[in-house]
Image (cartoon, rainbow, N blue to C red; front, side, top):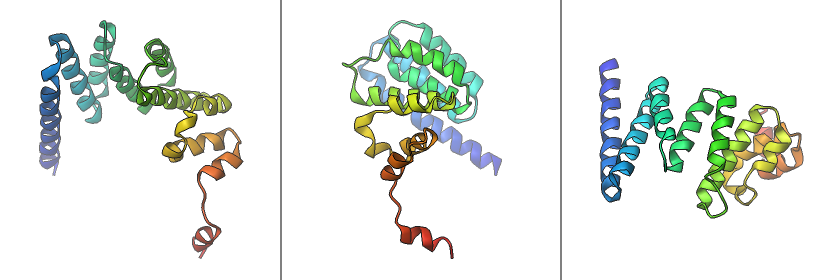
Length: 172
């Protein structure tokens, strides 16, 4: 069984590597190298080799003009390990790279990560304020618990309406 799991991991790794090679065709040599290293770190992280992935992310972040997505993936690694203080420090560096001209998806991703860090610190009100207000409906399952932590039950219930009949069905 372990052999099959290893083969599946190897096939997945090769698949993502091939995708990365195709995407790298229109990039400069430095961008290609950064992209391949970022993909390698992502694969290592998803295989549970967090220390190896973290080394690659650290080396990439030290470079000039590193893609913003590298910071996001590094933050995901830190958050998955509940290393919120380190994530907060990295978020501060990323904050300098994200502005109003950044793509909407990057601004929203930044806001959700910031809210997650604030929630972990127990700063629920600030976490609610950090949430991307124009994307509430698209992030209901993520956003509603933050409102619950912040004791804003009215907004949490509004975001996650559940019928009384549905609730009663679970009592039987």
